Image (cartoon, rainbow, N blue to C red; front, side, top):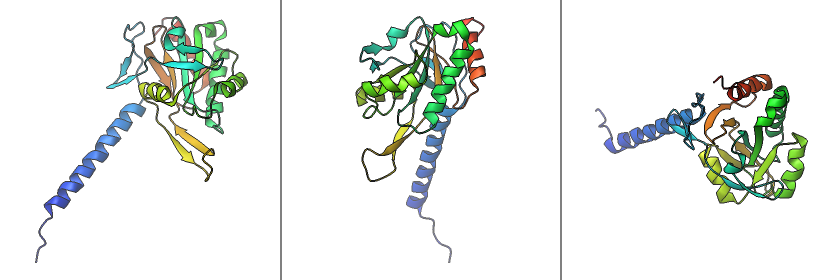
Length: 214
């Protein structure tokens, strides 16, 4: 005797498959290679495909000063999200940024490197003051209240989540997006670099924006 199909079960299965497909599409939109936006775009945000990247922020720098994105107008911003207790990836990316700036020579003065923490509970102002000195003399470390960190992370489409390594509440890692974002003098998104990008190629790309070749 043939079994009758269970329509509620089939409906639930289709709904689950649809949800998975939607999640996959969103992940692809956020992580796929992003074309550079037009230089000089007056919009505060640039749209990569259907996803807007970048936006305003109000945070505290490693010197304890309140700053916003407007403080860095007139320079390109090279922005990386990470955290100070990161064992390997963050130090490597920040070192790559330092090497890229060194490759650029005097043109590097037109770029402001910025490190925004996704772990403000541990990355306090005093901690960041010592941390950023390990990488570049002009690297700015930014922290702030958790809600403000979440706002800027959302604006830049930065994924981050805690990953506990022990029963100790203070002992955890943070999984996070590893892109380096290049923001224009007017605050508009220009392009971004995948984690592990060649610093020399990064320098060439950034210089092309400074020279108006892109």
